[in-house]
Amino acid sequence: MRSWSAPKVPRLPGVGAPLRLFDTAAGEVGPTQPGPTAGMYVCGITPYDATHLGHANTYLAFDLVNRVWRDAGHEVHFTQNATDVDDPLLERAEQTGQDWRELAEREIELFRTDMEALRILPPREYVGVTEVVDRVAELIELLQDKGATYDLDGDVYFDVAAAPKFGAVSGYSEEQMLELFGQRGGDPERPGKKHPLDWLLWRAERPGEPSWPSRFGPGRPGWHIECTAIALANLGSGFDVAGGGSDLIFPHHECGAHEGHVACGEWPFAKAYVHAGMVALNGEKMSKSKGNLVFVSRLRRETDPMAIRLALLAHHYRSDWEWTADQLASAEVRLARWRSAVALPAGPEAESVLTGLRSRMADDLDAPGALALVDAWAERALAAAGTDPEAPALVRDVVDALLGVEL
Ligand code: 5CA
Ligand code: ZN
Image (cartoon, rainbow, N blue to C red; front, side, top):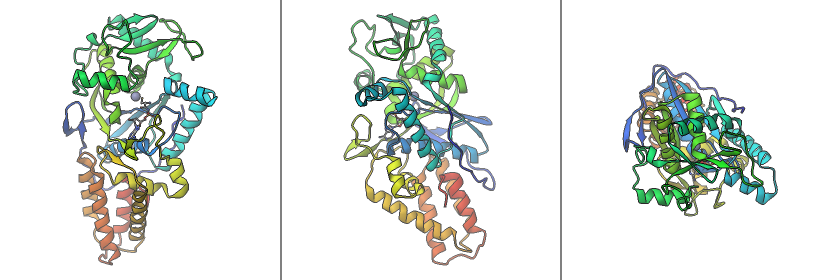
């Protein structure tokens, strides 16, 4: 599918620091060690209600990864999917009497516009699952050839017993896994499964549901295998970062990692599993199923998208937090102060802003720490404490390149 258009990223003097990130599988912050080209797969939306602030927060986190890598001299190969056929999308289309394809297309288009407005760097490949069903089916065939699957009334399951490292991504106990599996699209109680955690790879056609032909008969892909297939096809096994919100740790990224492992015989499938925290509204995770959503497209009608970006950047990407309207008001004040400061004919020296932001962002994306450094510089600048005519332009470029905020 079409991706969205890229914002310009200014080149900064010198080279940025190597990025360290919290890897869920390792349970700690460690160095990312990409080659000349860093590979990143970020799970995309299920397009039936786009784009809420939780989505925006997650995609912003990985946009920061992208920017810090680029500043450190890497090319970034970034791939993203759109889950454009899945139960919740089909259910929503049915409830509202829409064609599921039209619903998906419309929400994906809105998502593109929102991402562009927020200055999120676009993926090199933006892939709808419906575009690659054949490829997904081929990967399931490969898993079948390796003896990792079984048939249940025409549906194909991954046999968790074939995944020797199961649990290595999430580190969760079997009890936690069982609970989350049921809550997040799994079917632990389906009779006839070999193990409650076995997951669906191919869902045989049900009356009234879309289907594609395959060696397993007509049907459609299960959820986890779609991302594994799209990541493998574009990035290969062993890419640098697999990302999404923390609600994807289990089962989605756990299952995907083992599909990749069994299919390719290589571990790990992704070198790091990186997760953004959850954004809540009124005490509950913002989610399409609960309907407690604040849409980026609505906020954009009221405010500058750069203020939305700044409001999100005020939280560390890994923390869970709750959205309140006053955060947008504070971000608007901050944006106005920064813009006034970089519009001055001179300012205090800004080399320390460049090195300070590089160091904060390379340290597991400490955006709040980065904002504090720019605040301090802007305060000095607005107090007329500087004489360097180059400083305002440098700060403008640093804030643009590393934080993605256009001043
Ligand atoms: N299509 C799948 C991934 S393959 C999916 O989870 N789609 S989604 O539309 O539900 O979510 C898209 C991305 O936004 C995921 O990375 C998810 O983890 C993240 N996300 C969803 N809700 C929130 C939230 N409240 N806060 C932060 N991130 C969220
Ligand atoms: Zn995914």
